[in-house]
Amino acid sequence: MNLWDFIRSLKWRQLYSLFLLCLGNLSKVWPTWKATRKSISLSSRYYGPAHRHNTAANAFRHAIWNYLVADACITDKTDIEEILLWTKKITHLHEELFPNPPLARAMDLHNNAVGRKIFRDYGPGKSEEVVAVLRTKSEVSAKIGSQEDLDGIQAENLVHIINTEKNER
Image (cartoon, helix red, strand yellow):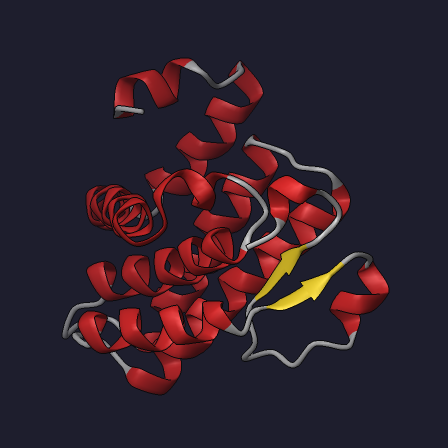
């Protein structure tokens, strides 16, 4: 989806929320968009269309997305916590703009947090190394079928949903 199609797909209230968030962070908008496109491209390269479903490939996509957004937005003048806050806000807003069922939403938010933790642990400029780490993590992604399953997963582990054949890795 190109940027214009994305904007046109939003309702007025959603567009207003996005506008307000971006208005206060104008310098981060274009790097975030480029990082988003890169995360989709990497996910398609490694997993094909499987990343569009609640699979381990989707877990990879959400985690690498958060890492890449933080990596694209950090500068010498910003600190890591400021960038991670922006990354959390913009990726959480995505979940509000394009809502999923509760477990899929919780899964996405968990995997987003894994990506931000990886950024905190590895720092900027390590995207090739981080891709390899997250691909390995996706291979051992925890299968969940309920919120209770998710509650027992450690913060550094990726998760995916197992409730249908389409969701199996």
